[in-house]
Length: 352
Image (cartoon, rainbow, N blue to C red; front, side, top):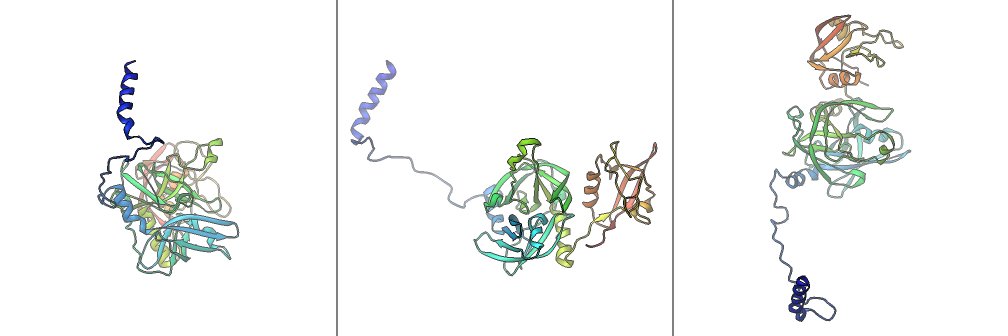
């Protein structure tokens, strides 16, 4: 009864202000009090996005097998664009066309300067100058928990911005297609990354590129058909991208470091085992190669690289490929029951 009386009293007071159709002559809503459009701190997500977005591009490749899309970033002011190899690999086929869509809505045809499936990196060139390149930061400075921002064109939605943190470092990830697979020592992030984000930048709070978004994890089974982000995204480190892009721009091809051994993919014990049998014309240990010179023999087990344990062949491969030819690594090697530390100077693969 008390509630009814109060409601009735309130209704009686408001009644004279109502029009016949129940509308109010003056809504009298409070005015919005904001900070003003564009008035954001440079270090805020909005501030970083405003700086980075003009230098992020969308990429479209039209070939015999259809149309594929991805993302990229301006690498140099004179038209060099960085992206993933798997975004543009179909553009290397006869009759295919590749185009770059800029943040201002303009579009330019692009040519492939160079690409490498080993690192899943490609460089494009458009005939345009005066572009604003993004800064490639030092990915060695990245720590787990650092805030990051992913920018790209997921599902063709240009200029999409998502945020998260660095979830893990040194994740061994295979990316690319079945025909051209890359092994990368990746940065893991929970920033939402979806199909179409590939090749776009992962930037830190200063707006520096620390990674190139390249892959996402999917749950096993029926759930994998969803094909979207589950908070497990992976990016190629900016330091690796820089080294590879420099080679592609300067020579059109990229090399990677090797130690000269075959690994036994069927081995299930601790560490990673050097193969015991020749594979085709390739011996388990390349004669006079880095491993051979260091005293590594067929059947030896590598249990750690630079003090970091390895349990899968991919872990060893990506850890080596994260280095540069000429670098020295320390492998913990087991022969029988004896273990020793071996210093290996990395060799360089032959250009393809």
